[in-house]
Amino acid sequence: MECRDAAVSSLSWALIVGGAAYMLHQSRSHTQYGRYLPEKGCCCPARLGWFLQEVPAFLLPLLLLLTGEPEKTGDRTGRTLLLCTFMLHYFHRSFIYAFLTRGRPVPLPIVLAAAIFCSLNGFLQGHHLLHCAHFEHTWLRDARLAAGFLLFVVGMIINIHSDHILRSLRRPGETVYKIPYETTSRGLRTTPAPGRLSFLSSCDHERQLTS
Image (cartoon, one colour):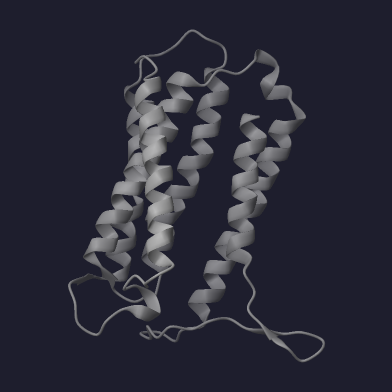
């Protein structure tokens, strides 16, 4: 398959503009999700909802990887390796986290919107890495590769551990909204945000690997 630069650029800008518009909308109102979930509404069970909305980001790159024509270029290994880290993250979110979560039901519009985003994200990552990106033959021996993978592993470990902490806040069968707190040496209660740290680590991992 040939690189579709125009499609990749257009879809990327659509995600950027859509994200900015949604952030503006969120600054003025709250999406009916989590603590803001109404008592009545058309919702999907949490586990099924998480699975349906996350799995496109795993299946689409996998489909591109399996159906793509074999290439003779030497940088195919590196591009496949990068894509596999992306797919590993979404495999965990789709097939492991989704069936461990104890969250509240998810409104169907949110499941649909998240599935559309994950579909676009999965296609963009898969198509760009497999058909558009090019790396030097020495890239696999570059220190930036090792640094990037280290950040990816650290970020994923933090992410999985943070998910475990959040699940542990709820008793079996409980779906109430809870926030983890920790007490500082001065007796102040603070809200830790390891999930944000793992997300930032993942973003820096992508920057390190592709720079």
